[in-house]
Structure formats: C-alpha cells, structure tokens
Amino acid sequence: MTRTLVANLVGISPYSQSRAHDEPKIDDKESHDAYDRRTWRSKAHVDADTGQVVIPAMGLKLAIAEAARRLAIKIPGKRGATYTKNVLSGVLVVADMPLGITRDDLREEVVFANADGKRGSGTRVFRRFPMVPTGWKATAEIHLIDSEIPEEVVERCLREAGNLIGIGRFRPQNGGYLGRFEVTAMKWNKTAPQRLAA
Image 1: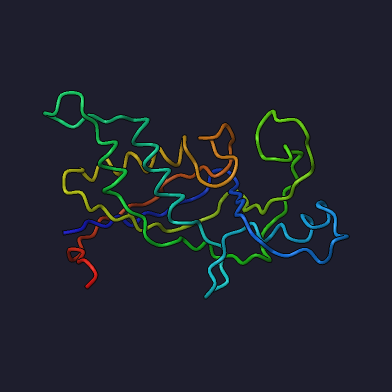
Image 2: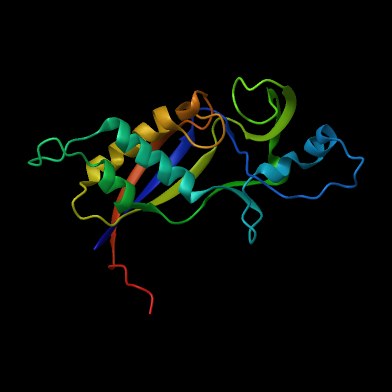
C-alpha cells in the first residue's frame, strides 16, 4: 500500500519564483529593462486550467530530498546506512500545490542582481520577480512508496525542508531567506498500490 501524507504548509517568509519563460519582445527596440518590467509576472508558475499560482511539485520533492541528505538519519540495523537515497526515490510529490491567488495578486520585487544570475560574476542590473507575502498557504500531498521508510522520517524531512531548505528563488539552501514554511497539520492515509501503465 502507498501511504499518502496530506500536509498543510504556511509560509513563514515570502515566497518568490523565477520560472524561465519565452514571452516574446514587442520589437527589437524593447530594452531588457522594459521587457523585464512588462513580463515579470511570467516568471510565476501558473496552472493553465485554473489560473492559480502554484508551487511546483518537484520544488517540494527536491526540498524534502535535500533535507534527508542533510539530516542523514540512520537506518536501524544497517551500520552507517541512511535514508537519504530511499527518500530521494521513495517519496513523491506528484501534484502542484495551488496558492489560492492569481498572477494579478502577485507583488513585484525589484532586485539589483547579477545579469547572468551567478553571484560575484560582475555586471549587475535591476531584475524583477513575482513575490507572495509571508503567510501564504498550500496543501501538499506526499506519496510514500518505499515501505522501508518510516512515516516519522518523512515528517521530520518535511519540517526540516520548511525550516532550512525552503522552496523557490533565493531560498535558504542557496544562501537566501525566502520560501521558508512551517507544517501546521499532517494526516496519513493509505491508498491502493500503484500500477504500471499498460
């Protein structure tokens, strides 16, 4: 049986996204700054069907996996082995998490950043990013498909992900402070085993 954890997340810091997009320029005369001013909302992840801004499923999955790597929780009876690899392959987040807002609700953050996005590389320019204020809320559905992983390990990794790893742009994992969250509620459910596609 697959175990599914439904977790309520609340942002304890603002959350910002920097999705790559290919929105075209108006013409050859549109400057990079004018283009950024016009298209900063396109850096947000938006569900095509509902129009809601979402947290990408992979963003949370990778945060949980990184938390597992840092925590290095040992597997009982297996010498120095840890749950790190188990969590990487055996914990899935398969659905994006709606934030209950649209692109029009996003705030603009202006940052004096490196032009190429690499810290210390030289040229700096003003760049604009979509920002969701502290207090944002989302519900995550996390599938535990590895029977060797105890539920408490996933819970601990999720909490650590919110506290020290974060999600999105300029998160703690990358030396920033955005995208931190706390887990306010957790509930485990059992679901039918997953089947391979025919």
